[in-house]
Length: 309
Image 1 (cartoon, helix red, strand yellow):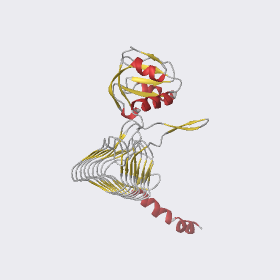
Image 2 (spheres, helix red, strand yellow):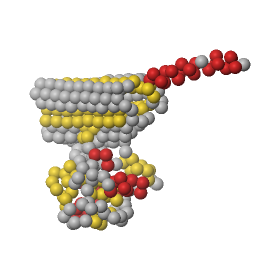
Image 3 (spheres, helix red, strand yellow):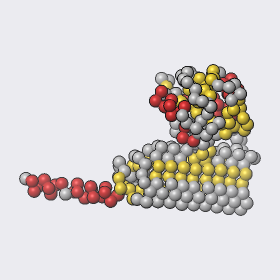
Image 4 (cartoon, rainbow, N blue to C red):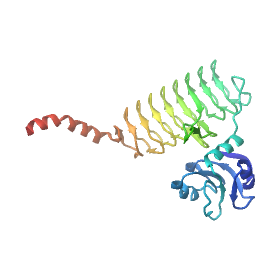
């Protein structure tokens, strides 16, 4: 998530009431999660296990809960609760703005695009040309939709990320300030849910088709010309490369990559990253040919036991 203008380090520290290490005028251009940070971004870290990863990341400003040596060319924001203060920054720079109309006046809708009754379109939404948005679709703020996109009834684009920190009093939500981006020629079935990124984009690539009741988690990037069948659940921060096929009721863990042209058979649990160009099946996931051999051998166990007797 990029700010509208450069902000000085001292001003960021003032906003969240914390101390800092570095030049008071050190430039800050945005804030992002660890997997999408760039120079000029703030990244937060609140666990010693991840200190080194955050300090050595591309981020040049680290919001951290311990005074540590500051890497050369970077700055630190020292906070007793980085999670809380990261949320403060999101709320400040990208606050929720309520809408009292069905289609926001700030939304931009292309030529020959059809919006059916009872569709909600939020603030700063952009929809391209020749799209068809069926009734009861909800398109949250800042969503970007390309040309020739079809979205069926009951689908929600841009709900919050499922991202929480456990406290003694319950769960605190990490506020989502990212977007959903739908590229050209995408088809989205009925009752699908595509969550926005925490700070970056959840993206559906050009020509990809989603069946009904598909869930896509925050910050996931789906490539071009993929096919995703009904009741598939894709976790957050997943990379699905081009021309991947996921059959019905596939589920994935977060932070993995599914390689280009992979085929994942129905009801498979994708528990790890897998190479492209192969077919997979089962939980935990295996190449389908190997898994089917194992199942065939299991069926032979009663026969083998009888022979042993």
